[in-house]
Image (cartoon, rainbow, N blue to C red; front, side, top):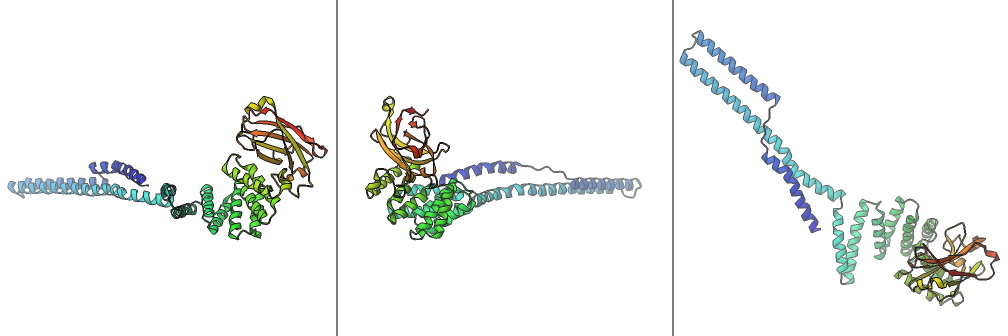
Length: 419
């Protein structure tokens, strides 16, 4: 911040020199219509008075000495009038022409800095210092002070520009971290009022639902449920909502349903991220409470629904391309739809590997295996760990088949490299 002001003052001084130097060197020579008229009048009066003196001399009304004396006085008076007129014009014009630039020298810097303070980003100059202080904080108290100061700066910026979605989201999540739930609710609600329906708005609604849930002492009130429904209508797998619903199910000891929500979260994550590692560990811990469902991931509600078992192996031609960092992404989907009806994302298993897909692994609540007649299944070894195919991934995709007619496991051999 200090460097910014130093450079701005230097640039301002350089700019002012472009005004100051010409003003100080200016020598006005101005002829106006009024001054020319007065000058011409003085000449005419002088010539007329001189002619009258000469006429009086010819008629012997005055003597030669008197004529010379009066003529000298007349010339002196004429020259004095002309000098006075010239001085007056130069004085007035000099003052007038220099006054305006000199006032600008004072007004322009004051106006510029005031305008920058009001509508510019002057307040944002604190951000680098605050972030640096946060990085250097040695105690929890220092870190808390830094976060509160950061929230103040972001709040002022949001008050000026409530359509700045990135700033608003940063502010809202910071309020959540500080457990300032009213502030988070206020910020996220203001954001939703200016956003069009989209997955981004669903993300903000998810954060709003989470803020309201925590403010209501971890209760899904009617108002919280309304926000949840609105978010799910835009993104059926909205991450924060999945987390909230999973926690609520876990608290109510509905562990199978909590697993369903967490798996829907896991599908959206970078499989190699720290969040994914933590979530997989949580899933494994909960699965230990439900040994009868741990192997297939089935929930009691999914037990009576349709399912498809896959027996997956790797072709010898691509085994050398497989490494332990890869993730196995398996899915079943409607041939006419890109979104999987059921899917799972797993660490690289021992092959051959068997897995059963059912309604508990649905990514969208109203798009499950139960809603489809024909499906196709696939398996992909992903280098990025994501659900979207990337060049270098190795995969296999089956032909479409009637789900109800399938009685045994479907054999899939992974061998096709994604171009």
